[in-house]
Image 1 (cartoon, rainbow, N blue to C red):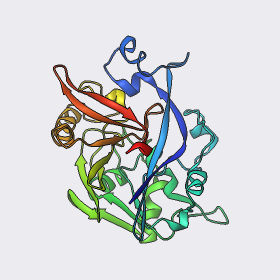
Image 2: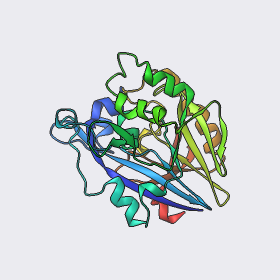
Image 3: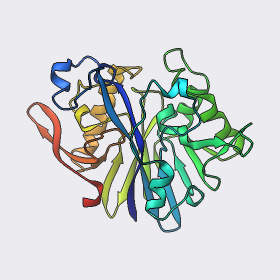
Image 4: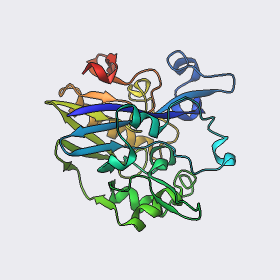
Length: 279
């Protein structure tokens, strides 16, 4: 098995929204904001090459949205999904499985692209099965008012219409060497993939822990629909990750790709940070 970080570009989000009730005087020391209180965040995906399977976890924001939508997010960075895949010798047509942790636009926007006439949509990964939890899919196609602007129908409905959607019903193994856990604090039915990489567990953290700065228990995004459930989610994850010496792979942390954890008197904290290439 080989693992590759896939950078798809960066976006800027309000620091207060990303750190919730944590005061700026604390979080800005670890994750600085610009003069508009915006922090820069990665949209880093993970590619898994395992025998005859090529599995991608999440796929960034895509390129379907118009300027009026994208201008709020100040997209930046030189890399795209396609260029990052190509750097490792792959193309979207090579992907066999597309795992979507959840269906917010910055995680699944690259799933679907315009057709040749730009009058409709088609899967960006034509040979892939798309995996998402049933709980999240049903939540996303009937969005609440708070999340409705994050669930874009053009990112979601064409997947089901293509016949390539596979719904995950429960926690457990979904592919050889890949199992999932389901968490509900950020959004209903978010899955966290756990990869068995030569006997060690690599956890793709999605929005359970967007960055290493979110590891302390109370550091929870204001975007989370049920922050008290996120507290339970983090506890349940740490109960498995700390004794299991998991490698945490971060989707949004622009400064750190990976870290391990340690238990301290003040709670769970970062043990060490490192690039994925070091595992």
